[in-house]
Length: 161
Image 1: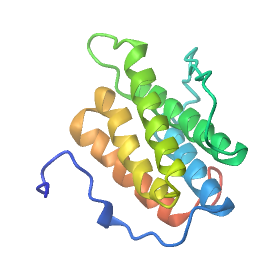
Image 2: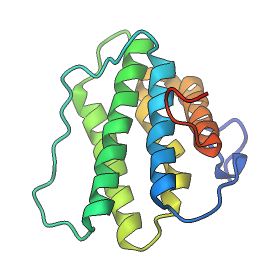
Image 3: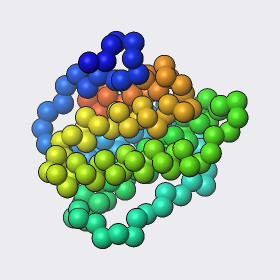
Image 4: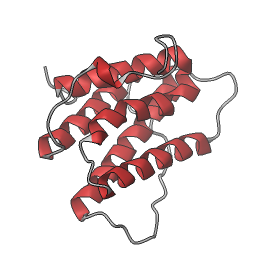
């Protein structure tokens, strides 16, 4: 078990219930949009990052594949916001974001293929941690992951009060 000071963000910090449904999808995507806006309040720093799409036949249905793509885009925007909020001394290659987002999408697809859609609610904050780590360092990435858990638990989308 990881210690309190480790980089791992405990999944027990916020309790989730239910299975991933339409409102759960909206809650995840909305929470990531709010986090991105908090990291880059002056505007959307997405730049020119384009996420490549696999050409392989997907085992997911259209709804599941759309969810993976939406969450992947939201995570890429969070990475861009984190990079803009705390630029490293030397610019990091775009492949870092492409690799972390691609890895997160792979895990999401695997969970959906195995019928564990409810795990996405638990995994998204871990993805936020991994994607922001190169830009925000350990403390900032952990704070972003904790904040994403709070936003998901609150179920608020960007612009809601």
